[in-house]
Image (cartoon, rainbow, N blue to C red; front, side, top):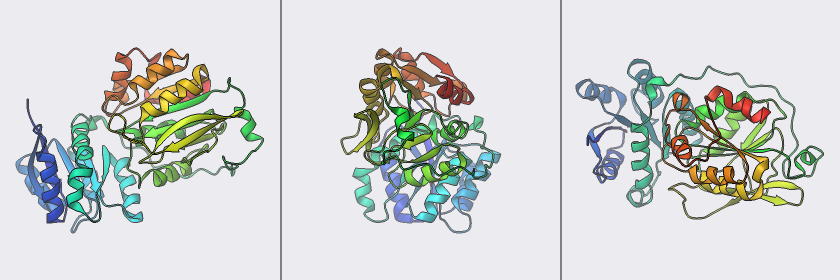
Length: 354
């Protein structure tokens, strides 16, 4: 079996050594080189092209975003962003995902050696995930202007709008996704009309990142999109994205659906986990629910979607042609929990029409 060839690009010699040690602890990964900036990286890549690039954002001579866009234009290659998160870097990382980066790993500002034990599994999984991504098919999303929309009432306050979700027959939508999911969610959520069914989303993402991602998507959508808080009500025209580092479950409070945000061990190596959300959807919403599994590696969500299917929910999987990584949908299909397989551009319609 051929090893996954990785190039590490980071301006810190300590970080490069730590990342190399983490990755080379897995026998299926080979670090073929390290570089302190993109200029040195290109020199190495002219000699030997990597399968995956682990890339920092802020570096001398050329920043990571410029380098990423150049690679995607000239020789599309899977890229994992590994960067410390500040407000400025978080915004840049959103640009990186839009430009084609597969996934994001949060690099600690201090305690790099602790990173070996805490984040090593995440980094190794991210590289393996990226190696399977079909970035050659990636098409950068067009630049979208913020949409003007009316201010919607707070989901934690009783309103007339909240009464629209009263009763078990009200449809509610759960979406689970991972690698490639930020682009896929943008396609789906920006296509929805303001008063579509209430939506709950698990996107595998670092905890420093989900609020900024939700805020950016919110500016592009007719619906309201925000990072979920504990006890938020699920209402038409609102999409709640699970906060990174926390699980999200559906619950009932009288006539209303709410989300519960909670700590807990990782499930399928993830927190938040799609399976945790989908399983609660099966129990609480049953046949009133729609479950949608989209692009991502691994099998998180497959068992939960089968539970939803068995409880009478409608279930959808994104098709292989439009997935960056087909792993999660493939596993859900294998388990027999998927009613319909469809392209990304058709998923918004399925949400609206049921």
